[in-house]
Length: 108
Image: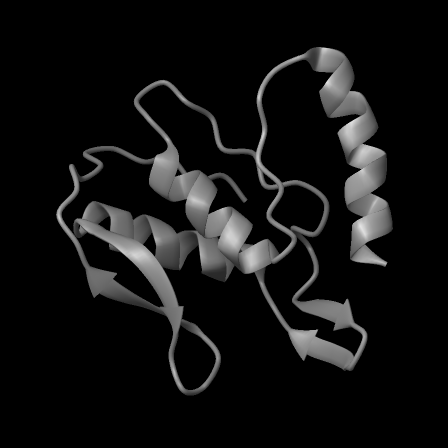
């Protein structure tokens, strides 16, 4: 149950006192974190790095954090900001004005 996991994580976040945003959709959360990162920020994508699938209520679906992160980084470096899904369910981008990244280090 994703909401139960989010609630458990929130307990610790509230103790820290820093602002946070809840995004239950993992792909959208990764995308937003990368789009909003600023120089000196660290985006940590934790918990599923080695898995290439997600278990959802409707079954198991292909999903790879690394591929989502790479797509978001490529889009960000190209100056794109928003994420949409292509007809096959993968990430695609819509152009938008935005400062682009000049340097990225991706450790997987």
